[in-house]
Image (cartoon, rainbow, N blue to C red; front, top):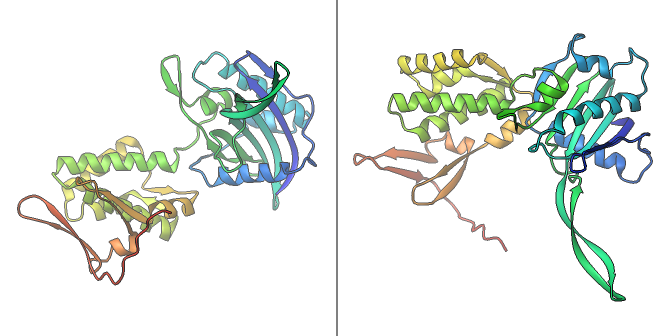
Length: 333
Protein backbone atom coordinates (compact mmCIF):
# COMPACT_ATOMS: atom_id res chain seq x y z
CA UNK A 1 0.00 0.00 0.00
CA UNK A 2 1.25 3.46 -0.94
CA UNK A 3 -0.42 6.22 1.08
CA UNK A 4 -0.62 9.46 -0.90
CA UNK A 5 -2.75 11.78 1.23
CA UNK A 6 -4.25 11.66 4.73
CA UNK A 7 -6.22 14.28 6.63
CA UNK A 8 -8.03 14.14 9.96
CA UNK A 9 -11.09 16.20 10.88
CA UNK A 10 -12.74 16.22 14.32
CA UNK A 11 -16.53 15.79 14.35
CA UNK A 12 -16.97 17.22 17.84
CA UNK A 13 -20.72 16.91 18.28
CA UNK A 14 -20.45 17.42 22.04
CA UNK A 15 -19.30 21.02 21.58
CA UNK A 16 -21.30 21.47 18.39
CA UNK A 17 -18.23 22.16 16.31
CA UNK A 18 -16.47 20.70 13.32
CA UNK A 19 -12.74 21.13 13.84
CA UNK A 20 -11.46 20.93 10.28
CA UNK A 21 -7.76 20.44 9.75
CA UNK A 22 -6.20 22.99 7.42
CA UNK A 23 -3.45 20.67 6.27
CA UNK A 24 -2.74 17.00 5.68
CA UNK A 25 -1.05 14.69 8.15
CA UNK A 26 2.71 14.27 7.93
CA UNK A 27 3.18 10.84 6.37
CA UNK A 28 6.55 10.53 8.12
CA UNK A 29 4.92 10.33 11.53
CA UNK A 30 6.07 7.16 13.33
CA UNK A 31 3.59 4.26 13.02
CA UNK A 32 1.07 6.32 10.98
CA UNK A 33 1.43 4.16 7.88
CA UNK A 34 1.11 0.97 9.96
CA UNK A 35 -1.99 2.27 11.75
CA UNK A 36 -3.77 3.21 8.52
CA UNK A 37 -2.77 0.00 6.77
CA UNK A 38 -4.20 -2.09 9.63
CA UNK A 39 -7.45 -0.08 9.62
CA UNK A 40 -7.86 -0.70 5.88
CA UNK A 41 -6.99 -4.39 6.26
CA UNK A 42 -9.51 -4.79 9.09
CA UNK A 43 -12.10 -2.98 6.96
CA UNK A 44 -11.58 -5.41 4.07
CA UNK A 45 -11.99 -8.39 6.38
CA UNK A 46 -15.30 -7.10 7.74
CA UNK A 47 -18.84 -7.77 6.58
CA UNK A 48 -19.08 -4.90 4.10
CA UNK A 49 -21.64 -3.97 1.50
CA UNK A 50 -20.65 -3.44 -2.12
CA UNK A 51 -21.85 -1.26 -4.96
CA UNK A 52 -20.91 0.58 -8.13
CA UNK A 53 -20.73 4.35 -8.38
CA UNK A 54 -21.95 6.08 -11.53
CA UNK A 55 -21.10 9.46 -13.01
CA UNK A 56 -24.47 10.71 -11.72
CA UNK A 57 -23.70 9.96 -8.06
CA UNK A 58 -23.01 13.06 -6.02
CA UNK A 59 -20.02 11.50 -4.27
CA UNK A 60 -18.37 10.72 -7.64
CA UNK A 61 -18.14 14.40 -8.47
CA UNK A 62 -16.89 15.31 -4.97
CA UNK A 63 -13.90 12.95 -5.03
CA UNK A 64 -12.96 13.36 -8.71
CA UNK A 65 -10.40 15.79 -10.11
CA UNK A 66 -12.92 17.42 -12.44
CA UNK A 67 -13.08 20.62 -10.37
CA UNK A 68 -9.30 20.76 -9.85
CA UNK A 69 -9.74 20.82 -6.09
CA UNK A 70 -6.95 19.78 -3.75
CA UNK A 71 -7.28 16.65 -1.64
CA UNK A 72 -7.59 18.78 1.52
CA UNK A 73 -10.43 20.80 -0.01
CA UNK A 74 -12.34 17.67 -1.04
CA UNK A 75 -11.93 16.17 2.42
CA UNK A 76 -13.07 19.36 4.16
CA UNK A 77 -16.22 19.60 2.04
CA UNK A 78 -17.03 15.98 2.88
CA UNK A 79 -16.44 16.61 6.59
CA UNK A 80 -18.74 19.65 6.55
CA UNK A 81 -21.52 17.69 4.86
CA UNK A 82 -21.17 14.74 7.23
CA UNK A 83 -21.18 17.01 10.28
CA UNK A 84 -24.38 18.70 9.06
CA UNK A 85 -25.98 15.24 8.87
CA UNK A 86 -24.93 13.95 12.28
CA UNK A 87 -25.05 17.15 14.35
CA UNK A 88 -28.86 17.19 14.93
CA UNK A 89 -28.96 13.52 15.94
CA UNK A 90 -28.54 12.53 19.58
CA UNK A 91 -27.90 8.88 18.76
CA UNK A 92 -25.05 9.18 16.23
CA UNK A 93 -21.73 9.25 18.11
CA UNK A 94 -19.04 11.88 17.71
CA UNK A 95 -15.76 10.87 16.16
CA UNK A 96 -12.89 11.72 13.88
CA UNK A 97 -13.11 11.63 10.11
CA UNK A 98 -10.05 10.09 8.51
CA UNK A 99 -9.89 10.69 4.76
CA UNK A 100 -7.24 8.78 2.85
CA UNK A 101 -6.07 8.46 -0.73
CA UNK A 102 -3.86 5.45 -1.39
CA UNK A 103 -2.86 3.00 -4.08
CA UNK A 104 -2.48 -0.76 -4.23
CA UNK A 105 -1.03 -2.29 -7.34
CA UNK A 106 -2.34 -0.42 -10.37
CA UNK A 107 -5.45 0.93 -8.61
CA UNK A 108 -6.03 4.15 -6.68
CA UNK A 109 -8.49 4.34 -3.79
CA UNK A 110 -10.33 7.06 -1.89
CA UNK A 111 -11.37 6.18 1.64
CA UNK A 112 -13.64 7.96 4.12
CA UNK A 113 -13.50 6.42 7.60
CA UNK A 114 -15.54 7.68 10.55
CA UNK A 115 -13.69 6.64 13.70
CA UNK A 116 -16.22 6.82 16.51
CA UNK A 117 -14.85 7.91 19.86
CA UNK A 118 -14.50 5.30 22.58
CA UNK A 119 -14.43 6.36 26.25
CA UNK A 120 -11.25 5.14 27.93
CA UNK A 121 -9.61 5.81 31.28
CA UNK A 122 -6.11 7.26 31.30
CA UNK A 123 -3.85 8.71 33.97
CA UNK A 124 -3.31 12.37 34.71
CA UNK A 125 -0.45 13.67 36.81
CA UNK A 126 -1.66 16.56 38.98
CA UNK A 127 -0.58 18.51 42.05
CA UNK A 128 -2.99 18.85 44.96
CA UNK A 129 -1.85 20.93 47.97
CA UNK A 130 1.68 20.77 46.57
CA UNK A 131 1.57 16.96 46.51
CA UNK A 132 1.89 14.95 43.30
CA UNK A 133 -1.21 12.82 42.73
CA UNK A 134 -1.78 10.33 39.90
CA UNK A 135 -5.48 10.47 39.01
CA UNK A 136 -7.70 8.49 36.67
CA UNK A 137 -9.42 10.58 34.00
CA UNK A 138 -12.11 9.39 31.60
CA UNK A 139 -11.14 10.47 28.09
CA UNK A 140 -14.26 10.63 25.92
CA UNK A 141 -12.40 11.01 22.62
CA UNK A 142 -10.11 8.01 22.18
CA UNK A 143 -9.69 6.64 18.66
CA UNK A 144 -10.19 2.91 18.08
CA UNK A 145 -7.16 0.65 18.03
CA UNK A 146 -5.90 -0.50 14.64
CA UNK A 147 -7.12 -4.01 15.50
CA UNK A 148 -10.72 -2.82 15.94
CA UNK A 149 -13.09 -2.74 13.01
CA UNK A 150 -14.30 0.57 11.64
CA UNK A 151 -17.99 1.16 12.40
CA UNK A 152 -18.69 3.41 9.41
CA UNK A 153 -16.77 4.09 6.24
CA UNK A 154 -16.29 3.58 2.54
CA UNK A 155 -13.38 2.59 0.31
CA UNK A 156 -13.83 3.55 -3.34
CA UNK A 157 -11.79 2.20 -6.23
CA UNK A 158 -11.17 5.34 -8.28
CA UNK A 159 -10.50 3.29 -11.41
CA UNK A 160 -13.66 1.19 -11.46
CA UNK A 161 -16.07 3.03 -9.15
CA UNK A 162 -16.64 -0.17 -7.16
CA UNK A 163 -16.85 0.46 -3.44
CA UNK A 164 -16.90 -1.33 -0.10
CA UNK A 165 -19.15 0.16 2.58
CA UNK A 166 -19.56 -0.42 6.31
CA UNK A 167 -22.31 1.34 8.25
CA UNK A 168 -24.62 1.10 11.24
CA UNK A 169 -28.25 2.07 11.63
CA UNK A 170 -29.13 4.86 14.05
CA UNK A 171 -32.47 6.22 15.22
CA UNK A 172 -33.22 9.41 13.27
CA UNK A 173 -36.66 11.05 13.44
CA UNK A 174 -38.13 7.88 14.89
CA UNK A 175 -36.71 5.59 12.19
CA UNK A 176 -33.62 3.38 12.18
CA UNK A 177 -31.65 4.74 9.26
CA UNK A 178 -28.47 3.91 7.37
CA UNK A 179 -27.59 7.59 7.47
CA UNK A 180 -24.02 7.13 6.17
CA UNK A 181 -25.14 5.82 2.77
CA UNK A 182 -28.59 7.39 2.53
CA UNK A 183 -28.15 10.88 4.00
CA UNK A 184 -24.42 11.51 3.62
CA UNK A 185 -23.16 9.64 0.55
CA UNK A 186 -26.58 9.39 -1.14
CA UNK A 187 -25.87 5.97 -2.62
CA UNK A 188 -27.73 2.66 -2.62
CA UNK A 189 -25.41 -0.26 -1.81
CA UNK A 190 -26.29 -3.90 -2.15
CA UNK A 191 -27.18 -5.85 0.97
CA UNK A 192 -24.26 -7.21 2.93
CA UNK A 193 -23.63 -10.96 3.08
CA UNK A 194 -24.74 -10.89 6.71
CA UNK A 195 -28.06 -9.23 5.76
CA UNK A 196 -28.70 -11.77 3.00
CA UNK A 197 -27.94 -14.72 5.25
CA UNK A 198 -30.27 -13.32 7.89
CA UNK A 199 -33.11 -13.23 5.33
CA UNK A 200 -32.35 -16.83 4.35
CA UNK A 201 -32.30 -17.97 8.00
CA UNK A 202 -35.66 -16.36 8.73
CA UNK A 203 -37.15 -17.92 5.60
CA UNK A 204 -35.87 -21.38 6.51
CA UNK A 205 -37.18 -21.06 10.09
CA UNK A 206 -40.58 -19.88 8.85
CA UNK A 207 -40.95 -22.77 6.41
CA UNK A 208 -39.65 -25.32 8.93
CA UNK A 209 -42.23 -24.14 11.47
CA UNK A 210 -45.00 -24.35 8.87
CA UNK A 211 -44.09 -27.94 7.93
CA UNK A 212 -43.24 -29.07 11.47
CA UNK A 213 -39.54 -29.69 10.83
CA UNK A 214 -36.90 -29.57 13.62
CA UNK A 215 -35.38 -26.09 13.58
CA UNK A 216 -31.89 -27.21 14.62
CA UNK A 217 -31.75 -29.65 11.71
CA UNK A 218 -32.84 -27.23 8.98
CA UNK A 219 -30.56 -24.45 10.26
CA UNK A 220 -27.61 -26.84 10.44
CA UNK A 221 -28.25 -27.98 6.87
CA UNK A 222 -28.64 -24.35 5.78
CA UNK A 223 -25.25 -23.49 7.24
CA UNK A 224 -23.78 -26.62 5.67
CA UNK A 225 -25.08 -25.67 2.22
CA UNK A 226 -23.95 -22.04 2.50
CA UNK A 227 -20.48 -23.25 3.52
CA UNK A 228 -20.29 -25.67 0.57
CA UNK A 229 -21.54 -23.27 -2.12
CA UNK A 230 -19.34 -20.41 -0.93
CA UNK A 231 -16.32 -22.70 -0.78
CA UNK A 232 -16.99 -24.14 -4.25
CA UNK A 233 -18.31 -21.13 -6.17
CA UNK A 234 -17.83 -18.01 -4.04
CA UNK A 235 -21.62 -17.62 -4.00
CA UNK A 236 -24.64 -18.46 -1.88
CA UNK A 237 -27.04 -20.42 -4.07
CA UNK A 238 -30.56 -20.03 -2.70
CA UNK A 239 -31.89 -22.85 -4.92
CA UNK A 240 -29.29 -25.24 -3.50
CA UNK A 241 -30.52 -24.38 0.00
CA UNK A 242 -34.10 -25.22 -0.97
CA UNK A 243 -33.06 -28.55 -2.46
CA UNK A 244 -30.82 -29.66 0.40
CA UNK A 245 -32.77 -28.33 3.40
CA UNK A 246 -36.22 -29.35 2.16
CA UNK A 247 -35.13 -32.38 0.18
CA UNK A 248 -38.09 -34.29 -1.26
CA UNK A 249 -40.64 -31.77 0.08
CA UNK A 250 -41.79 -29.85 -2.99
CA UNK A 251 -44.35 -27.82 -1.05
CA UNK A 252 -41.70 -26.64 1.42
CA UNK A 253 -39.34 -25.77 -1.41
CA UNK A 254 -42.05 -23.72 -3.10
CA UNK A 255 -42.89 -21.92 0.16
CA UNK A 256 -39.21 -21.10 0.66
CA UNK A 257 -38.84 -19.88 -2.93
CA UNK A 258 -41.90 -17.67 -2.55
CA UNK A 259 -40.22 -15.90 0.37
CA UNK A 260 -37.03 -15.48 -1.68
CA UNK A 261 -39.06 -13.90 -4.48
CA UNK A 262 -40.86 -11.60 -2.04
CA UNK A 263 -37.55 -10.49 -0.49
CA UNK A 264 -36.07 -10.12 -3.99
CA UNK A 265 -33.01 -12.22 -3.26
CA UNK A 266 -31.06 -13.30 -6.33
CA UNK A 267 -30.67 -17.05 -6.98
CA UNK A 268 -26.89 -16.66 -6.84
CA UNK A 269 -25.66 -14.18 -4.21
CA UNK A 270 -22.06 -13.12 -4.67
CA UNK A 271 -19.93 -13.24 -1.51
CA UNK A 272 -17.08 -10.71 -1.76
CA UNK A 273 -15.24 -11.93 1.34
CA UNK A 274 -15.38 -15.72 1.02
CA UNK A 275 -12.57 -16.38 3.50
CA UNK A 276 -14.54 -14.71 6.28
CA UNK A 277 -17.66 -16.83 5.63
CA UNK A 278 -15.63 -20.03 5.37
CA UNK A 279 -13.89 -19.28 8.67
CA UNK A 280 -17.13 -18.31 10.41
CA UNK A 281 -19.15 -21.30 9.18
CA UNK A 282 -16.54 -24.06 9.38
CA UNK A 283 -17.96 -25.07 12.77
CA UNK A 284 -21.50 -26.19 13.52
CA UNK A 285 -22.45 -24.90 16.99
CA UNK A 286 -25.26 -26.33 19.09
CA UNK A 287 -26.63 -25.52 22.56
CA UNK A 288 -28.68 -28.22 24.24
CA UNK A 289 -31.48 -27.62 26.72
CA UNK A 290 -29.24 -29.17 29.40
CA UNK A 291 -26.85 -26.26 28.97
CA UNK A 292 -24.26 -28.30 27.07
CA UNK A 293 -22.66 -26.41 24.18
CA UNK A 294 -20.80 -28.21 21.43
CA UNK A 295 -18.85 -27.17 18.34
CA UNK A 296 -18.41 -29.66 15.50
CA UNK A 297 -16.09 -29.11 12.50
CA UNK A 298 -18.10 -29.09 9.28
CA UNK A 299 -16.37 -32.12 7.73
CA UNK A 300 -16.99 -34.14 10.91
CA UNK A 301 -20.62 -33.02 11.10
CA UNK A 302 -21.16 -34.26 7.55
CA UNK A 303 -19.78 -37.71 8.42
CA UNK A 304 -22.43 -39.87 10.15
CA UNK A 305 -19.75 -42.39 11.09
CA UNK A 306 -18.40 -39.68 13.42
CA UNK A 307 -21.47 -37.73 14.61
CA UNK A 308 -25.15 -38.60 14.52
CA UNK A 309 -28.38 -37.07 15.83
CA UNK A 310 -31.04 -39.70 16.61
CA UNK A 311 -34.74 -38.91 17.08
CA UNK A 312 -36.21 -41.16 19.78
CA UNK A 313 -39.85 -42.37 19.97
CA UNK A 314 -40.55 -40.29 23.09
CA UNK A 315 -39.79 -37.07 21.18
CA UNK A 316 -36.34 -36.50 22.65
CA UNK A 317 -33.07 -36.67 20.75
CA UNK A 318 -29.68 -38.19 21.33
CA UNK A 319 -26.39 -36.88 20.01
CA UNK A 320 -23.86 -39.65 19.45
CA UNK A 321 -20.17 -38.85 18.98
CA UNK A 322 -18.34 -41.93 17.66
CA UNK A 323 -14.81 -43.31 17.30
CA UNK A 324 -13.19 -41.14 19.96
CA UNK A 325 -9.53 -42.07 20.38
CA UNK A 326 -8.50 -39.38 22.87
CA UNK A 327 -9.91 -36.44 24.82
CA UNK A 328 -8.02 -33.27 25.71
CA UNK A 329 -9.33 -31.04 28.48
CA UNK A 330 -9.34 -27.39 27.33
CA UNK A 331 -9.01 -25.98 30.86
CA UNK A 332 -7.79 -22.40 30.59
CA UNK A 333 -4.87 -21.67 32.86
